[in-house]
Image (tube, rainbow, N blue to C red):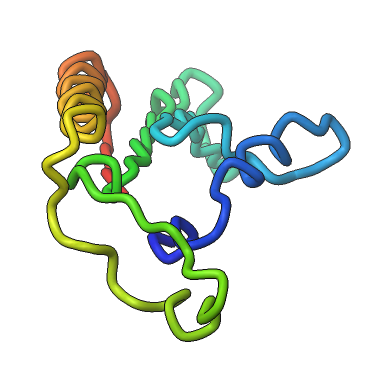
Length: 121
């Protein structure tokens, strides 16, 4: 969740690189696309074609980057600050640029999707 920014979120990205893990967090923003088929074994007629597969796309976005926020832990009071809300909107140019890049990525992902069902998380 967003509270991970008060720790080291890059460790989660690195953990995804391990081929022996089921953890999948390849980037701050990413897409998951799956197709599902309905197999009806009760068809009376061999002439009936099964329905086409249904495509589901999940677009996962990093709302901390989108909001232009960043959270750094206070080493002396880490437990107290870990679940604190992120600070207000930053006026840092790098964070503002990252937010714009994130928004551009989201717009492209939404435009390119051809899924039957589209979720943004």
